[in-house]
Length: 46
Image 1: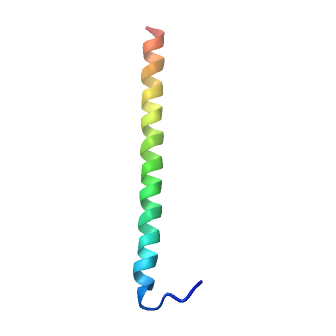
Image 2: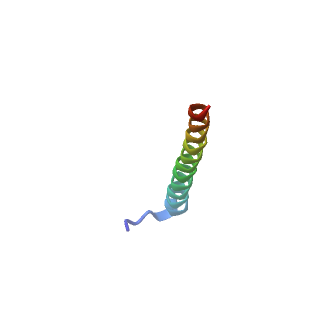
């Protein structure tokens, strides 16, 4: 790992925040796609 000096905390926390946000976006998108798919199936059934 490269030497980050005084900025280690900021760099690591930025990476963690980015990963958390990406996981949240993916999770919310997956959940919404399931909900929309279920709604479309209900509409198709009548």
